[in-house]
Length: 132
Image (tube, rainbow, N blue to C red; front, top):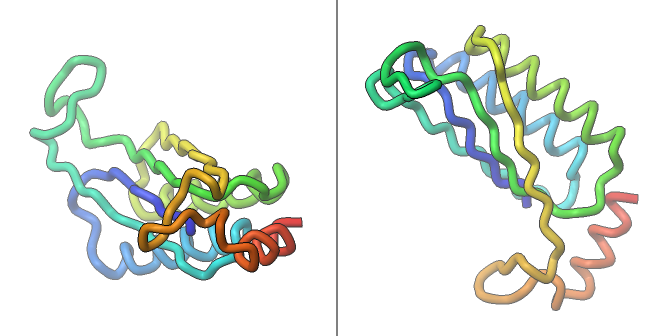
């Protein structure tokens, strides 16, 4: 279920992007192994579309990663995941002040194909087992 949005400046070649999304996937999958449906969207921002501290185009976008994840994984798994994601982004973009926001969701507020995930008892049991 992890769905992430990585906001970054333009200019990184596709080879480094492949390495980046693979490293982010690996880190997310280690912390959130079930189900294996991790989506990462790269959103690239040109200099003239970024304001920092009220100044348009003053510097490249500082990377920000927002990821929606299920509740339940352990805090140590999150710490390890965040360090790995931070390293992957730093290796690709070499920019300061990388921020990550984890949005944790209980299964009763997420739907797949119109059905609440909490209504799928097997899903609930499998996730509970995977994150314990």
